[in-house]
Amino acid sequence: MADKPLLHFEISERKVLLRIFDVLFVLIALLLLNNFTDFDYFRITKGFWYWTFLLVTYLEVFAHIFELYDLQKASKFDIVLKNVVLTSSITVLFFILTPIISPSLPDNRFQILYFFLTISITLLCWRAAYIYLIASPRFNKKVIVVGDSFDIQMIAEAFKKADPNYEIVGFVNTDGRIETSNDELIQFNVKELREAVQNYHIKEIVVASGYKTGLMLPLYNELSFLLNKGFPIRDYMQVYEEITARIPVQNVDHDFYRYFPFSRSNQNKFYLYGLRLLDIVISLIGILFGIVLIPIILIGNIMGNRGPLFYIQERIGKNGEPFKIMKFRTMVKDAEAQGPRYAAKNDYRTTPFGKFMRRARIDEIPQFLNLLKGEMSLIGPRPERPVFVQELSHSIPFYNIRHVIKPGLTGWAQVKGDYSGEESGALEKLQYDLFYIKHRSLFLDINIILKTLSTVLSMRGQ
Image: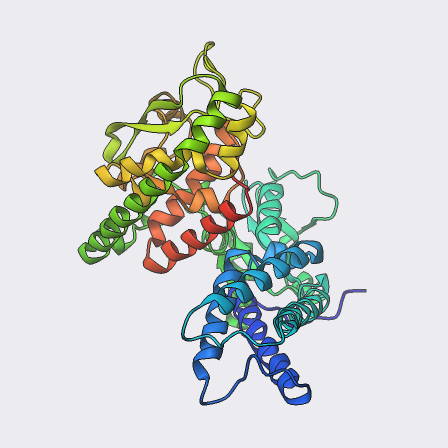
């Protein structure tokens, strides 16, 4: 028997829902605490409206930094528990330490504890309800993929990884060449499509047919019938990009400009001048911060690295122009005695102190000099070495397109993708880089900065 159809919230809808109800439930809880107890540190009134504004701002910013709006992590209570505690702690800390516009510290210091516990417990209760009610498999969006010669296993895994509530029930094989080892994916016949949509409560059909081969007539007729009935039918490229925040370059024809036009921000002078000004300010702050840390880094290098402090390497920049970057050395001397090779997660060549610097992103500090010189920007694709650029350009479609903008100290691929070397990891990073080039904007830049802060604060650098 098929499951009963249930309401499904799209990715953007769930993120908005989380943001709204995080704030709403916290404010209601604090209002109740104020009205029914002697708690008076924080009050929601017209006369002190700026207290509420300040709290909401901190809560939204730190919830974003500590990934409470990452849908994959928001569906797992153990991760939510850790992130809620971090968010509540930093929010309360910043709130009580903000001068002038936050309330004076109460005589009874326990009120600070009540303030923290109210925010934490409220968020945990609401997020537990979200996991049980909305992130539950009962609310999955059920989908059928149709087309020819696509990798159904890859599509299903990529979509599930990006959105746990997006469920591919099965596929329609139009050319007999699709194979899968996943027994949970059902293979439908073209003639069964209407019946499958009804019986399995399908909410969407994704068309992954080649643009040049097109659809065969029987399938075209079936899809036209469903479309005329108001059933949503969408293009695979569009859905993949929307759900994974990547561009599937391996499925794009050579006339790529039809599928991922560049963002207007790449030519917007106000945006570029503003970004350059930000690069200069951030680079100066970063250089000063590095000068402060130099004594600690020197001691750590003498004890843990035992060799040169800096490591200079050639990288490829904007328009394919080479430049030199400098980093604090994190690997053993002669790490590439047998030739260039990709860095890897838990790389055995990394020294103990080097591993710490990578996790804290301290090894990147000297690159603020490249920002100041204009060879790099704060945000963009990470610059790669010439030898790897040459290899990857021959094996991965459109790899050189990532060089149309300046390389960055951080980027969309760094905050979204997994750390992996070799060609498969480079392909995933390229997909993210091209997504950034296509959708480059102030909002996306802010998003990357916040996610980078989350990575640095949680020591997830590698």
